[in-house]
Length: 320
Ligand code: NAD
Image (cartoon, rainbow, N blue to C red):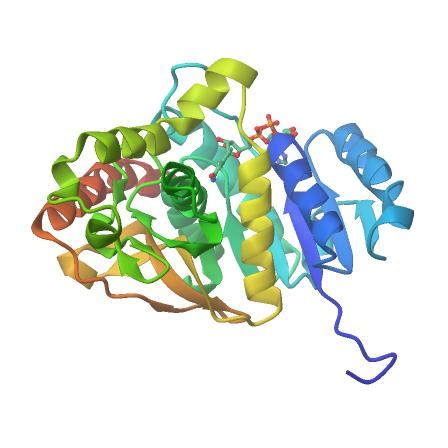
């Protein structure tokens, strides 16, 4: 890169709560962007977070951080939405649907009014449905409206497998797909430890019926409930996940990440956002992987699509 011609990488975060500020902190720690703006309904909160993050600058990577308003989205490469109500104890992600769909509609309208023409990344729950709302309201091409999908669930899955087998989680290849929520599913047929299929590595005859593996998946699926019971919210894991996704996008990495994207006939599923491994780069979602799923996995994916489709069909007409 020629000196003085470094590319500006500008991210605007809408929602400077637990998730937004944990994400911002991850960006600062990893030096992923050089301009970061925090926007929140609660302006004081955004201002406080920006000041606090700026005071870490001498220990981190040089970047410009400030709080601001929606006009900051105009020249942003990436706008990340983490605003909205979060899950209360015992509340499912889908319970949040109505509340957060209205909030999402207002936020996306304000983003688009700025003249924004970059990539939109949604993390607010229920993330699959709200990514679909963001697509409808923004009118952006679908490859540029991305949901954080099952990135966190996939990370939890990889972590728990790595703990079980005492192998570095970065050497565990595994995906959680479908809804980021109760109907998500593990793709057991494609789990590999260092390239070795799990059934061979773990010497497991029928993974889908294995007691330990079933328990392990349940702990992935219910992880948010377990954490919310203990500390009220989850935010560090997703903060790091959003930072990973940001790097994939802004550095044109063509990385494979389990994001939420619009299905258009894959597996016979249409017009619903679901988490699937996809290749992500500076243009957004380049390609969704076509996994050869087992019969059980296909059934579970159809179930997940059905759950989301029902709520999507109720909510989308209310925001159009
Ligand atoms: P929080 O309450 O700490 O923060 C939400 C922030 O949004 C608050 O600062 C609030 O002022 C702001 N806000 C609300 N309405 C707004 C609006 N119209 N415009 C601008 N800002 C607005 O909540 P949190 O713990 O940060 O969670 C945020 C969202 O992230 C929730 O929906 C939660 O379920 C979700 N979440 C997603 C994942 C994931 O994997 N995708 C993981 C954890 C949490």
